[in-house]
Length: 66
Image: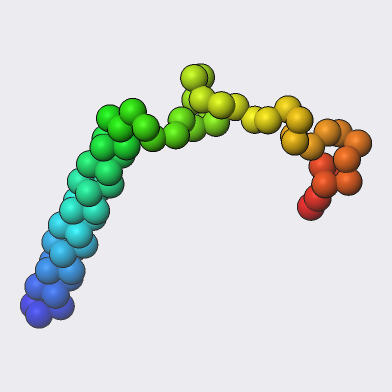
């Protein structure tokens, strides 16, 4: 019986910790989205995108790094 109580407590603690972390992360993300001075992602449509001058090209030695 003690094992099941321990496992139930561990489960509840884990779920509560996860929910606290998710809420904190969501609030951080929303704050960053609302900040007009935050840099845009290079993957965003309105972001800066990759720099074509410094981007590796097919024949460059650093292109085929494994």
